[in-house]
Image (cartoon, rainbow, N blue to C red):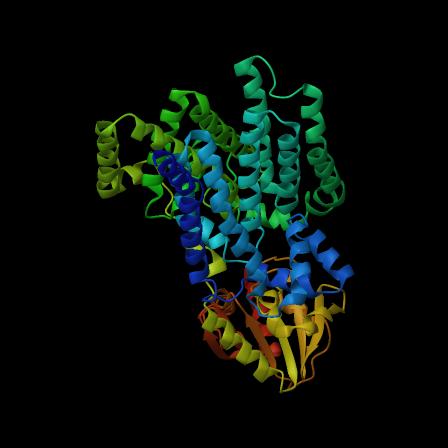
Length: 544
């Protein structure tokens, strides 16, 4: 009878607990997935999934990510045409990462560690949000979790088959996202650490080197085809490093400190970022001190953080409160799970003391967090979840109304891809217009002009010509009396840009005849002649 109870307990440990956590995680990820319109990056992938193969390849090469996720979307595209269908791979992969992390934690320190690690991943705001969007991060999360789990399995069992499974997953993770190099580098450092700790590699050096060949061969191929010719020094990278990703590149100690804290604000959400950072520090200290598998988890995570900070300091990869550190989520969850398991093993008094510290921190830690420069930005502020579904439906209605009347519609690439499910095949017909700085296609009775950069600019500043409204208007003659509309998804900035062209801050004097908007989307009717006069006047004043 006792043997039967032991078997039942083993089944609960192995299957029931991870199954429950996986089901809860799936529900959390599914709950809000349809509440938000697709982002521009998702729209780009929606377009890639359905575009002719030659155009799709060109768009993948022009993008900042390797090709695996795009290839997966193209395989799934014929199975469904809903605008949220292409989010399904992220939902599935992000959910499956939960039992994989459980298995890794269980191997490290037992079911308690596995359960806590899996629960943290299931409830992480960052892991949830990246599992709700058609971006490669959900796939990366699953593959990196698999890399860690198979690395631990290979170290423990010392079988060549496990080593090759690790190699295959590492190669796939690299093809999913370049940030996976952080995890790969950490596990390679882990192989070296095992050599130092035991005096010998876990595998013959030749077998270990052979298993890394696929990873380095794919990395070399990606560098030759994509990273070198398309990303290194490209306008895309320059724009990213100098603008929206600039806060996540830091070579100073203060910058790296703030970005390291930002990782926890992102993974746990801004309200719990400080508590998460403190909990992690305690768990890491316990694991590193206890040795064995706990130390293995702690130092593996430390290696991942070190690689991320090094890449940030050299402006090669963003590090901090940004989706790009999703790769660190399994490491942090495993360290926390193992640390709590070790804490529980020390007895109820230690558990009570640790709980009291965290409770006091959660209640009164705000001043300390401010003193430590704890970032307040978290996953909830990311643009993937900012455009509500009703905003997108409003923009759809505007486009359908515009298509029935002749005229010109000016937009940018960000807005065009955000509305890619609406434009459909028409967007695939876009061709260079004039000097090639603007792409044009037909939408019903409208001639659509799409500037060559991600965001449209309207001010007198020296923006790249391919980003400017003036360039779109000059790309081809517009007959007097033609209705000219501007539709953008960063509409608030555009309206203020028009107003800044006149001394009195009047957008009407700058050529705006009418404005309609819903949330992020703004539709403006403009007078091209009045706009040209306003921008010429603003430039003359600047010249003085």
